Length: 183
Ligand code: RP5
Image (cartoon, rainbow, N blue to C red; front, side, top):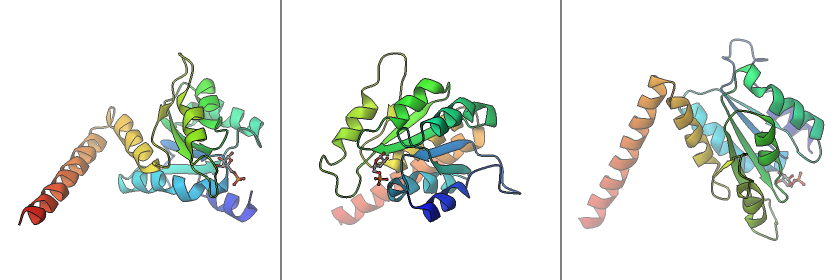
C-alpha cells in the first residue's frame, strides 16, 4: 500500500480535524488502489453536506484494524459504513458481521483484473441470512453514497429535503433532454 496515499486518506478521517463535525458515514476500502472508485461516494456525501471519514481497512492485510474499526464505529457516531473492495472482497461482509450499523458494499474492479469485478460482486452480495450487506453495482460508489444519504434522511428532515431536491433535479434534466430529442 502506498504510504503517501494512506496518509492522505487517514488525514480526512472525522474527529481529528479541528472544526470539522464528526463523521456520520465511514467510507473504508481494502486498498488505496480502490480510491479512484470509492472517491465517488465521498463526493456524493460532500455534495449533500455530509462529512465522511475515508480510510483504508483491509480484511486480509490489516485484520486487527478491521476488527477495531467495525466494533467501534457506532460508538463514534458513525451511522452508515460504506465498504469497498475488489477480488476476494471480504471486507464489507466481515464488517457487517462486527457492527450493528447498516453496511453498503461496493464491488471494486481493480485495474487489470481478470474477472471484471464479478468476483468482488459475488463475494459481497452472497451474504448468509442474518448478516446483510446492501450491495451496489460493480464500481457504483456514487449509488452507495446516495443510499447512505437516504438512510440518514430517515432521521434528518433537512437531508430528506435535499434528496427530494436531488430527485427533482434528475427529473428536470431528463425532461429537458427529452424535449431536445423531440424538437
Ligand atoms: C483488495 O485487493 C482491494 O480491495 C483491492 O481492490 C485489491 C487489490 O489491492 P492492491 O493489490 O491494489 O493493494 O483487497
